[in-house]
Amino acid sequence: TTTASTAEPTTTTSTTQPTTTTTTPEAGTCFDDPPGWVDSYGTGCEYYVEFGCTGAEAWGRDGVDAYEACCVCGGGTCDDKDDSWTDYYGDGCDWYMYNNADNYACNGAIGWAPPGDTALENCCVCGGGDL
View 1 (cartoon, rainbow, N blue to C red):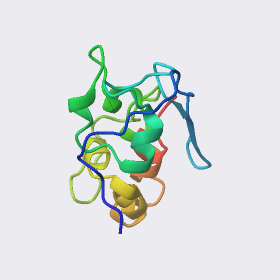
View 2: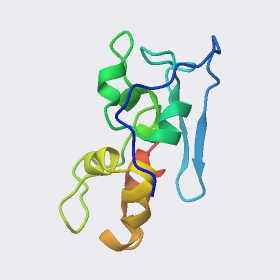
View 3: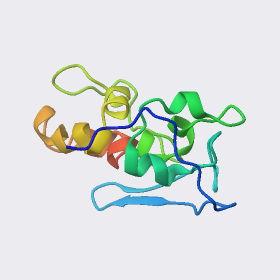
């Protein structure tokens, strides 16, 4: 099992980072925003796709961290559908964002809320939300 790393991200040698787009058939598209964003170590959203978002707040750049910039961390250009939405356990989209290493939270979302009203439909980090 792979776990999210809290270690310092590896610096890439590229001077520009490609913009990533996360698409899920159930929900639509989220765009990393701002395009080309990199953290204080020079790594972009691709790092967080691979290693998870735990600790991302420590590596922000110019007041923006991966939680704001990267779709995989719940950021980017997408809004959760309903700020008051929660699953059967009372967990909202913030819980899914902070507990989604290796897609753990989103993979279990189907069993944790009524069909058609899960985190998959409501939370950007799981591919839902409003564009």
